[in-house]
Length: 108
Image 1: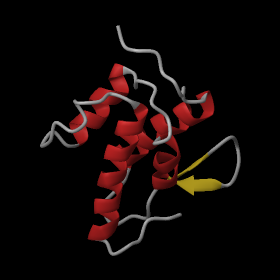
Image 2: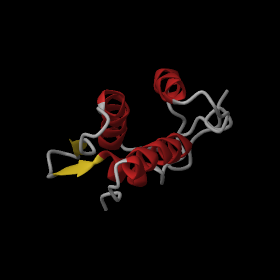
Image 3: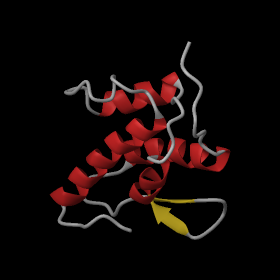
Image 4: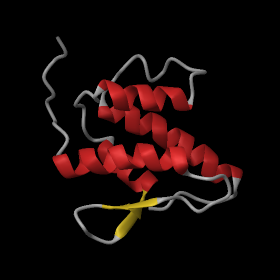
């Protein structure tokens, strides 16, 4: 049984991160970084959502973990820790690499 999270992810951030995962899948090469809205506020980049979610150690659901894993199976970094913290860190690395490919800095 997974250990209880000491820092659970708020529902609005969980939903935003799940959207981020889907948006990354649909992000066409060369297109600007996708944006999502947090609690109906001004849109922010998917990298910004990842940066926020990295503060939470709650375990990701298996479907989100599997979706992330399919993005890059060349490393077992994600398999070591199924937390939102690790998933967000791992996805942010992919986002940064894609932005670097097109000479775009990460939005802050």
